[in-house]
Image 1 (cartoon, rainbow, N blue to C red):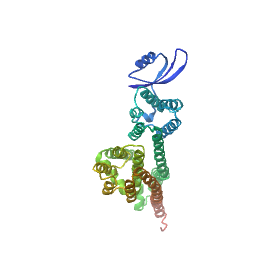
Image 2: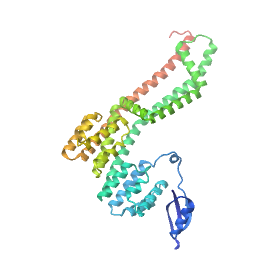
Image 3: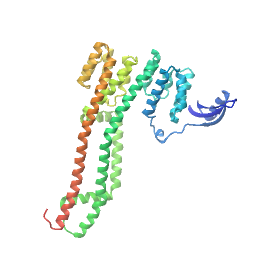
Image 4: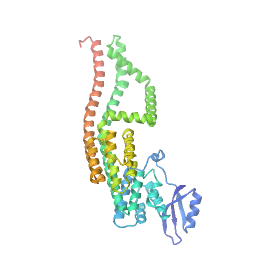
Length: 397
């Protein structure tokens, strides 16, 4: 089935717009005519370049949708009326089509969660399950409000990570380009001068000029080799064994940052699900999906088995030895007091704050390390050239 956007007129002359699902364009036209309207224009939603290659609707769009729908339902509007208003005011063409599709399925008898489930590229399983819990408990506006808080905190954390890494990336890029320009443009000019002099050059200068000449001549081979190595590494990481090794390496290199990040994600997701009325075992299963590190995610399976056997959460998590001691203590207290959902959210807040501090420390370490590394490389280049100049002019060095 394909989705078609249409513009039509009623027999009274009113212009209406919407979407219709049909196997082909002719069938969609026939279905529109059967409803008593006259089709004027029928188009398929144009896909952007990014979407053709599998990109999803942004988290910002999903957050906006959740915030606005929560506000409309909180004001007492019915679900179909709220969705219809959002579809009319939506600026994004793709999101408008999806909202019309959800509205169509609801009017055909599907529940809201079932309609969302038909668009897994936009609404993750976590989102759908929370909505299903809200439908079962009759507290859809409350659940959407919790979802809104969850998406906002996740977006804020992601933006903090992104902004923290901007300067190191710029530093690495500009430093790398400077070295490449020196090796491929500046040094070859000196090599011509040194060749005309005919005198023996110091060993560091010979090594540097040899590397510069090879890079200038065989740059395309170096580029192809780097691309091939990158593609091979990426394909290996996509395998189960490669992903486990990559995640283990990340834990060794950035253990504190990774553990805090995954602890905050897991606890906030689980706490939000429990707060919305999702059963514990189902909430654990869904929370596992938000953990990107496979080694840490594997521990959740053991926790689920422990919960089934009546051991609770704190015991199996302690046996796994992955989450920090403070988080385990707070989770244990939450279980004992019957406030596990509230305590999980407090754990998430605590470790989100700790994550920001850990990221700040990591960046404060990596920035001078990168500057020192670039300084050593450029210093070696400058020193090698000075040694060659001093040797030619017989000036003692």
